[in-house]
Length: 203
Ligand code: GTP
Ligand code: MG
Image (tube, rainbow, N blue to C red; front, top):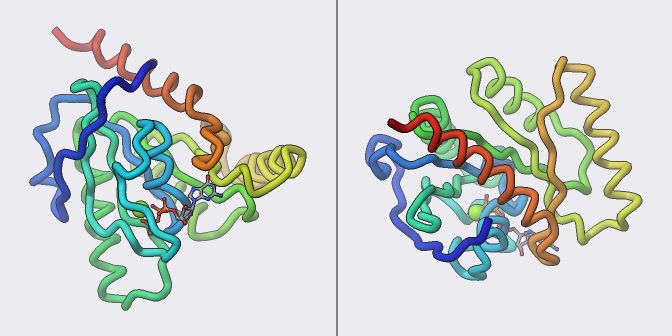
């Protein structure tokens, strides 16, 4: 799929104020600093579309971007950021969960994992909550440029083995680097497949 046009639409703290839910939508979620905003910029080919930072905690709202006037990409705040107050963290968590559990046009969620880290409890718990709520998700490994290809493959295998202990089925996985444009086509292809299926459900 070609991204011909990508535009910022709006930012909200309340899912009810997000754009009316007619178009298919895909959200990026993961720990703070994992590279959610950078991935949106890489996929859309627009370096400054979503705001990024070396400091965790940059994205603080639900941010909608419209692609080709046909579907939405959503940048969410990260979870597990230790340096904000507990009350602030609880507020973000509620905002994210309300959005994820209630947004009717959310087709698929992409959970981002830094490929350098071994499986973390906070991510595994987040994914099991999604599973329990019946929210479909894929896994995207980020920052692949920071390891050698062999190390990336080992990390992915180790992650799969960990998930296999917990899940009967392993979700689809993608390896990406926002730095090197790696994984762009595969992620966009998955979205295209969902968009096509969505089209077929429309009268
Ligand atoms: P929050 O909004 O704070 O939750 O963070 P985020 O997940 O949106 O991360 P963001 O995209 O802001 O990136 C965090 C840092 O990681 C920035 O310094 C990015 O330049 C860097 N980064 C993101 N993706 C990659 C990547 O694929 N490779 C490398 N080398 N750095 C990356
Ligand atoms: Mg961000």
